[in-house]
Length: 79
Image (tube, rainbow, N blue to C red):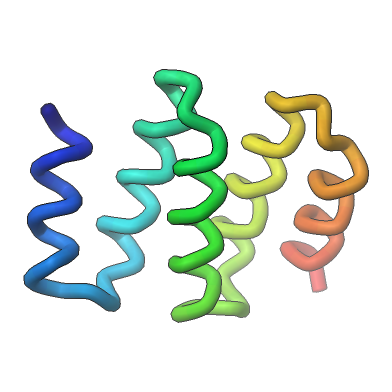
């Protein structure tokens, strides 16, 4: 599916944060939250000032009722 295709693209461009974000978002949509968090964190390592990535990470934490982690991510997003 789409996740597999994006992972293939990531092997060709391992620092492509757009692809990482797509994998993370699609993973969250199907309930694969640990995978989603992992890919958002990888993208954030490449772009630590990207508020959009931090905000999306916060949403995934919220979906899992990890409110403390969600709050930390949101606070980082607005810094």
